[in-house]
Image (cartoon, rainbow, N blue to C red; front, side, top):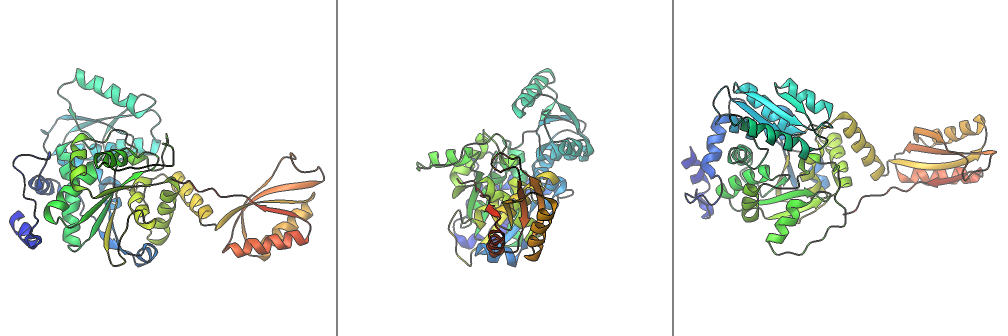
Length: 435
């Protein structure tokens, strides 16, 4: 099977053969072995083209939907491949506040293993419950991920028979993610560029090794958050490039699934050699992308999963109009609250939702007249709050109102009508987070 697949791409005359000297922790054979190990339970996720998103981005855009994988994230692939190498009945242990915990728990259940998952005390209850649903025994301890990890390491020292399942810095985990690369080539062999979110580097290293081995002409672009740009910094330092970031690192980045401060050394070796570039996206760009994927493609993506699309939508790297680009949408485990916040922020950024301040004479009749004025211009009132009289005289009322409008021209018309009545009307500023 491997011979015929390699033969298909032999015309490139650039095939990187599997290296017996173990330049990297895995070779293409390990990826094919992973494919065989996980094929009974891992889903071959769809590669979808969306004309509307492609038009927005100005390229031939396609999305590889790992949101439709088991546990709704790519993490299941590596976890299952790892556990298929572990004796049945083993106890496996992991630490995670997100998708890795769910992937390990489900993979353990499928391979007749017991899983113990360490999670920080502030882990979202939805992720704790999901991990338990998949069969994991959850131990919540420590106020941070690092504290939970420290407790796990203490337990591992006391139980040497336990098997630790790393989230990304592991050959079997990397090989499991490499199966995504095999599927991409099966689904679109003439792909030009693949864009991949980067956290610890397990996803992009597996995909890069697979694609660059089978078709070296493919360009691999990695994406970091500007608020947690550790791989971006290391990559540029390794290449001897100057770089700068305008934003400060955040304690709680929107794309928390890739907020990794120590990328895996096994992964970095592959990234330095085989990834063509690493770019960064900011919080607002990700929030807008989460909302656009939901609105235009009906895809529910978590912040980390939307970073690849954000990089293309915001033209973080150059590409041709006819370039066939595949974005890895790596996961869809976003809470309803955060999804709502992303949509809300996107509406403000798009200027379809506006915050205004209006000062009118005191009295319900004047408030009613203001609401009627909004209705006249088809502006929907989202919220209305009477402000304290800090800057307003006692016989007038200042209202802080959020409205939805079809276009900004509506705001101009409303302002003119308010001023004609002698009402003070001001639009509150919308700040976009820069890089």
